[in-house]
Image (cartoon, rainbow, N blue to C red; front, side):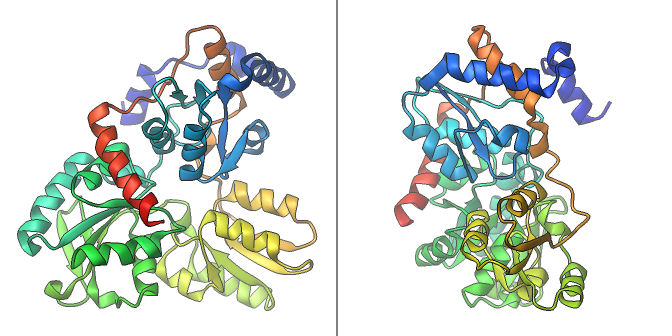
Length: 368
């Protein structure tokens, strides 16, 4: 039995009732639940969610924005977060005590967030501080677990988003000589490079091999990148860019900074999910775009902007598989369980972890 199978055996199984109902029946259930719960319910939906789910979201956005909106919506006692696990954790950290956060399917995780755990960071921190002394400030992408955010907060660091990464890296260098950037090496590398730090002054820490490697002199390293990545964005390749250039000479390429350094350098623009959405919204009618980000969002942008020629940078790209675990049957089941007074899949971050994780988040919000 593998880990996923073992995990699934511990979870409450989706009842056959929800598996067997038609989309129309499930939609009726969700609408009825929303009407019955009223302002006590808030459904935030991440941009990468399926259309069948995002249709019922009260707000759509990126993970931090949705967590902040959840906290601000104090009338809502039930936050049904349509995203992945780390996003629901952030919402639980920021919301009030009377608010409860649920994830419709606990299998909706994030492979990037899972590439850095508490044991690994403690071991890495010990080795890195032994080598470099008290010269390192940790930064973590919000796409990380609550325990990683907590570790970073406890050691004076902060969280970053793809929108404010440049500002936060600049701030970090006012605090320490070096930074440790978790868990996405590509966002860290692309951000540092944009700020003028050469690649030879960056190193990659591999938590599996427990090894630090660099193209230059290790002692000259300013940026230590955790060896993690987004399994979706890493699948956009140089060959994808070359194909678009050959097939559509007038097409602009815009990609997320979680893509590899080589792809970002070849693209016309790079930016956060929100920046990509805004670029398409503001682009003139008739313009052509190849977008390097998650397929559910790309397809939605195609549908919403039919006056523009939009394609995925990688036409064979699949939607984010873990994000896609949130579907209409699980959403309907989650809402019904709340109404029945037997809610499941509540996400609870313990007080100690929340305390320091919130410090990391607040340091970012102060700087932003």
